[in-house]
Image (cartoon, rainbow, N blue to C red):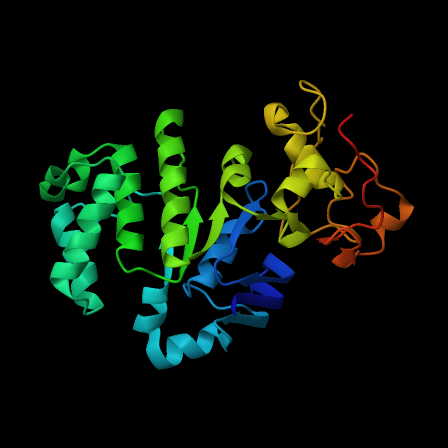
Amino acid sequence: MTAILLDGVSAHYGAVKSLDDVSFAVEQGGRVGLVGESGSGKSTLCRLLVGLRLPSGGELSVFDRPVADHLRTDARQFRRNVQLIMQDAVASLSPRMRIRSLLQEVITIHSLPADETWRWIETLTARLGLPNSVFERYPHEISGGQARRLAIVRALALKPRIVVADEPTAGLDVSVQGGLLNLLIEIQRELSLTYLMISHDLRVIRRVTGRMLVMYLGQIVEDGETEALFRKPAHPYSAALLSTNAAHAPGKAGQPIILHGEIPSAINPPPGCRFHTRCPVAQTRCKTDPPSLRRLPDNRSVRCHFPYSLSFA
């Protein structure tokens, strides 16, 4: 079953073109990573997937139904099935409520069986290394790392079908990160969850996901199997992005590909290929002819006229 489907999705808000012609599908039970610089459109895509915003154009479906239909006919059930782990975990917790009340609110809103759900919450809390005493605290009485783990508990308490995780391990110690990622993978397998995970830490993406989407200025520029993309990226932007993580890149350590200039404005994106203003291998055609996202023989898609033209070595 297709859990998530985007076909030519755009998100234009006023003059800002946050997303443009975004297309991909995720099967139920898939683990997909989403990477790109700040301003690439990742957060906007998150909001669309969980129904906080609707697209300006194109088709966005979850479980073979448009998200707009889900929200119109049964928004509560949709939000139970599709959960967001927010990047700012502390801000996602009401400062006026104890943790127990915050979690009880989730149970009440969705009419879940209280005893069974609390047993599941306590199991998750223990597996995440948090004591039960955390339930009696207010958000300001816990650390940022504890808040992040509680945000994960709250999202998984509903046993959703899709989890959109925005930087779920940011700010955590490396030792804690490892245990958390292992737990996320275990729970994904137990519940047959579908994950879309956003992270600036490419080590996280490589460890957790089987497929990787690379975004640049509101567009998917590469879509392929995670390991294949790490070994040999097809798009010049993917190559540059991966090269900055030398310990996890397939090329020479200490030889990052330097991109000059800032990501252009989403209000006035460049003509032709949107990456041509920073691309080290751009040619004349790239400045005028926008590339489409096309399928390559090695089971990946790339938005580039000259794929594999930039290597690490």
